[in-house]
Length: 288
Ligand code: GLU
Image 1 (tube, rainbow, N blue to C red):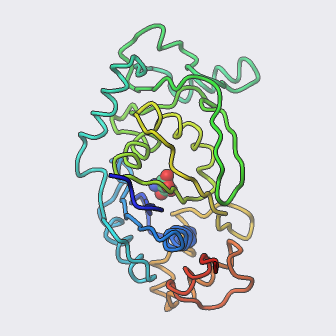
Image 2: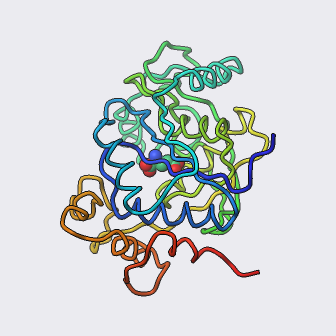
């Protein structure tokens, strides 16, 4: 069955509270889905067991609803069922594309320090694929070259597939990686529009290639939106309480104020003013 048009997802990781950057992301996700006549799946990305906290999961759901964003489906959690990830990894393994690796971050850093340049392209500094070792990390050999896509918010993009070596699909701690689980989920959940922050632009070429290796006939469409930054230009972090929806809410701020602040920070409205979620979504509608 063909997927409905513009099925997208909002995919926070429960490693902290929602912040104004997530609010901006939700505006783009819901706004673009609604404009395309599509839907939003809420996916809790709890693939990283070491950093996930149950309290954050519940708080994210509550803060999102308080802001005024209601998903059409979900929440679904990556932790609910591990079989899609093991099955996808087994498929790649059958193709001879998965290998164990014992290179750590330090191995990559040492290699770069010795040569004065970072490792680029496929493989890894330890030649682990050739050595066929039983390493703690599992990597996927994506091949070389690049992938191109027309980003709905950035424009035409082309990027190398393996810019920092073959990416890990399973980390040495035993959890499936962000890079891998997102591609498996977007495929099985029939996501055909990926709307997310520009900080993930660098992951896209590798994710398009991995999707193809997993049997995806056509890549999703991508839209990478601008990020909310701190006044000094830094990215927002889940550790900053002054931008967390939970803390701002507790200090008496209203949902439409926070939405207005986020929308202005990413250039969707010219000046900060209170605006409700269902109103801000209308900014994406273009009259025929
Ligand atoms: N889970 C990721 C995050 O919290 C988003 C994943 C994605 O959109 O690809 O930033």
